[in-house]
Image 1: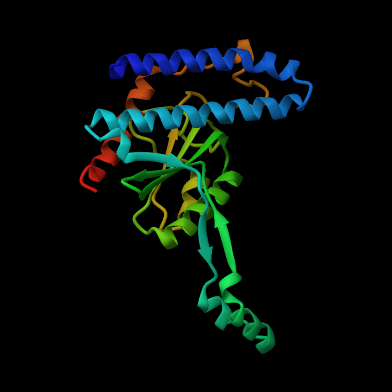
Image 2 (image 1 turned 60 degrees about the vertical axis):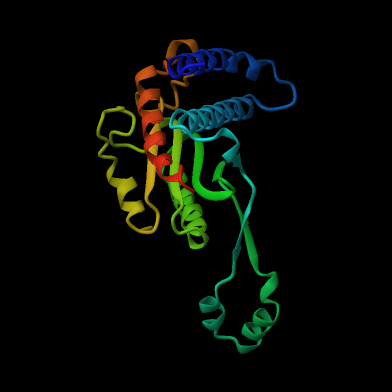
Length: 237
């Protein structure tokens, strides 16, 4: 299947899923309506993201078996500088003796590997606002303590970050709040990708027919081009 045909297929799949989300939520007996809707939208964004990454890799000549995507957790270890700074000697010595046990398991939605090398991490959201962004930045900062060259992305269906993230212009200037938060995480060069045009409105959900937003092929082409440009440097990995 060619690139254009694959993008058309993704649009068809997006349309089909979004149009049944409302019904699925209303018919669910095991989960609350809101939970079903959030799960469906989040799953849709993850699916679109993964398919775009795969298409980008193959379209630049990458060998499909060399690409793998998983959310396996990464082990983050306690820092010696933290231990050494603990004022209470007894607690400090206890942690030092048991240091091997002090760790945190971390993952984001999509960990991208080329020939088993962790090269890119993508967080997927149905929408993001700046309170969520703080947590996303922290996660990526922690990952980059182990993988300093890691490429980091936020893929969102809709944006609630303010600024022009939802305008889908050729140049995105961002928002005051988002850039301010990002300035405190200088090791994280976060690329924010929005698929749907127009700021998210809580009272106008896209799974309702009156507020449905189309997934435009032009935007998919832009996102694909971004992924292609990012992944070209990994062809020689």
